[in-house]
Amino acid sequence: GGSAMSGSVPVVFSLLSDWFDDEERNAASSGFTAMMGAGIILGQVFAGWTGPTAGWRYSFLASGTITILLAVVTMICLREPIRGGKEKVLQKMIASGTRYDKKLTWSQFASSMTRNSSNFLLMIQGFFCNIPWGMMFVFLN
Image (cartoon, rainbow, N blue to C red; front, side, top):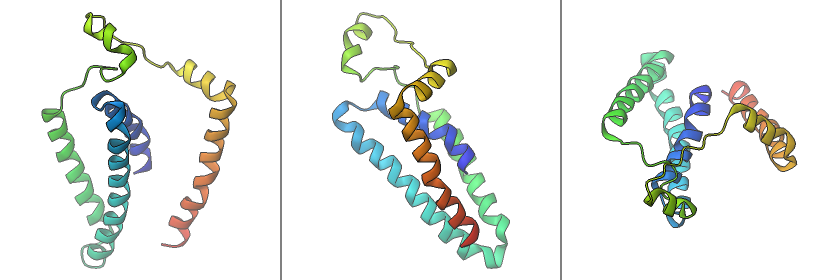
């Protein structure tokens, strides 16, 4: 779960910023984050409900099947938005036909994470803050 989310969550937030204006973006991000929490809760309830009768593998099989089906529906139904299309500072550039194609490279990311003290502290804090959650899932289940 965590490895898949580590790749998909940043992409979703990027898409949300391209789909929603500044005024709507917080609500969209909050809705997405709330759905992640609801998924965690419902996943644990589902596994606890079906596990004793169907076995522990069933919840993974059901979740994986639903995820693959929804991925196919997403690929068919959703269109990629214009990159930066909802950013006010880029509106004139996009309206003139110029395409915004700036992308973050690995070296830019590494530089931003290590040279900017705020980013570095947030990254370290996030890492150590999540260790207790991992231990709780291992030792309290």
